[in-house]
Amino acid sequence: MGFEEMWHELEPVGRSSASGGYFRQPWTGAEGELRSWFAEAAAARGLRVETDGLGNQVAWWDAGSGDAVLTGSHLDSVLDGGAYDGPLGVVSGLAAIDVLRERGVQPSRPLGVSVFVEEEGSRFGIACLGSRLATGTLDWSTARELRDRDGVFLSDALSAAGLGEGGRWSELDGVGCFVELHVEQGRDLVDRGAAVGVGSGIWPHGRYRFEFAGEANHAGTTRMEDRHDPMLTYAMTALAAHKQARLAGERATFGRVAVEPNGTNAVPSRVTAWLDARASSEGSLSELVDVVIRQAGERAGRDGTTLDVTPESVSGEVAFDADLAARIAADHAEGDWPIIPTAAGHDAGILAAAGVPTAMLFVRNPTGVSHSPAEHAEVADCLVGVSALANTLERLVS
Image (cartoon, rainbow, N blue to C red; front, side, top):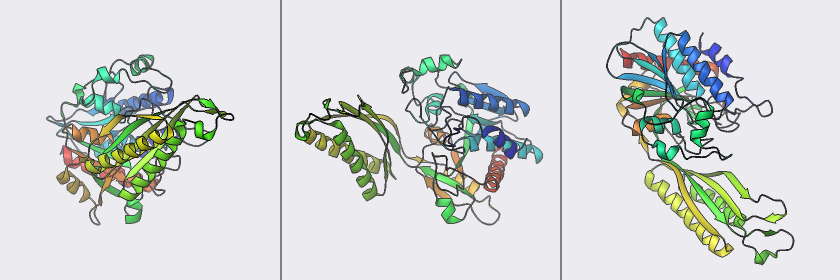
């Protein structure tokens, strides 16, 4: 079963009939169905599947000895997300193993295809939660207390899914290299006219919870000048974040908001909003967030509201292995694949930060749109990506 057949099997899982987008949140039915599919696809290839207490999976081609080579990605999605973000890397990893076997490659090192859970952070708020716990960069005693939007603890969600506990995963101890293939989440490759690109690194990024508190009151009887409205403070903060990010050439997004009591005819008492901020350097990220917080605090003083800011998830700048990236880029028969940075977070960044030599391959996205049903990749480009990944893995395991 090749790439196209595998992709056809995955396409309907978790897809909304209304929007065409995907809802594959961790430890829910759709994501569980995908993990079962992965285990079956691996078993059909004679690969040994290991699963940790969190649900992270690795399908091993047991061969040779020494440090293993690992590829793969994730199967979860953002809310109403696209089909390619994550699953493309998993399916391509399995398809690349098929290609290597067709070529008669006999690996001198173990080769694995991985699936890391909760990469998007769409349910429990911390991006790359599965790889953070597996590499030991996040402690289980902290993670187990995380709650989703419905107040469900992470530990309870795992129990309901028939899993155990998260924590550092010894299965990763022998990994000497990680290569993640991913759909591009922008237009760089479109503008360059290239089907595939190689990652140079990941911008530093973070998620910050802004809690604006004020005074609930009647929307009709409360004079405008008598209000302590946290929605006004939030609205100015969102505009300030947009302006500061544009001026600095960075990224700032308020994409999630919760309002209390959330009544049409009531001044709210509290607004909680999450800022996603990304920048080209750690210093620039810190400066951007500090400016937004300062302006939000000044506005809160004028509105008679209060502000509390909590960093929920912050990832530093990641530089991928430059020599490995150059070798992968030179794979292209007609010239080197372009080497490009990304402002999106990935499990590859977590493994790189944990000391594992890491590389990324990106497959062209003709729409340039991601985290949306409009996310796309042409089959022809996907097959070029599989070939590039297979060439890379062959070089690494030979």
